[in-house]
Image (cartoon, each protein chain N blue to C red):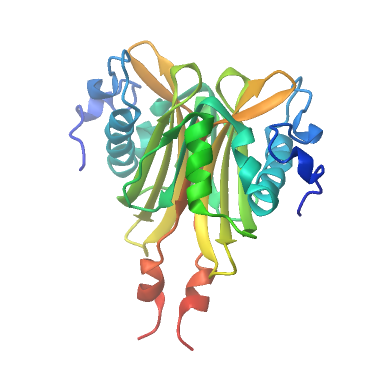
Length: 160
Length: 160
């Protein structure tokens, strides 16, 4: 599902592949969701140093684990710094489900459930909610809420 | 966490308790989230037949299980019919995490992770995303995406 992107010399620009630039007339939210989600996680895998390009100065981002406190980041620079601190390295994502609905102001709300393995470490289940806001020729990520799921319930489910 | 509500004679009206009717000036999204979430699940528990009152004709609602197809419902009547078909009876909810962010058009996006037990049946983990859109004196639920989480990963996590 990974996307071929432009040459390294472009990696520090914020040009995104053109196929996110959909024609927003008669938008099908599921199509936008299924177009956005593979593209987003391809950037997580291949170009985490460009992932901030999905966001802009009005974006809010939180990345943490279920039930743990976390400070949201505001704007592209803070989000880039946070993404850098997460340290994505060959981060693999397996998608379990994608729900997308039309929302306020021509935006699209997306809930993703999946599993992630960063740096070859164990797979961890996560849920991520995006709000894609319209911009000329496409969308940007206005809201991003990422939570790894805790697995306490796993132990309870194991035969003793 | 359950809320005391007005007398039974009001159950078929769409009057909601006044404390959802916040003053939206200088909104703190976390406060709105923590005000909304207990109120919403209290209605799931005590007044599922009034739960549609959180929605309006522009709302979209989906309720299902991770990875399974589901048809979204549009508008208060379809949502009410779907809620009725779910058959909430003394449905208990335990909240693990609530994330809320300011979003488009003065709205608030909320991601909830929790566990639900309906009719005394087994607790099931779920994730639910809401978009609260502004309306005079408060908010309504413009988007609602509910997914029970599958527990395959549970078995994998069990010692063999």
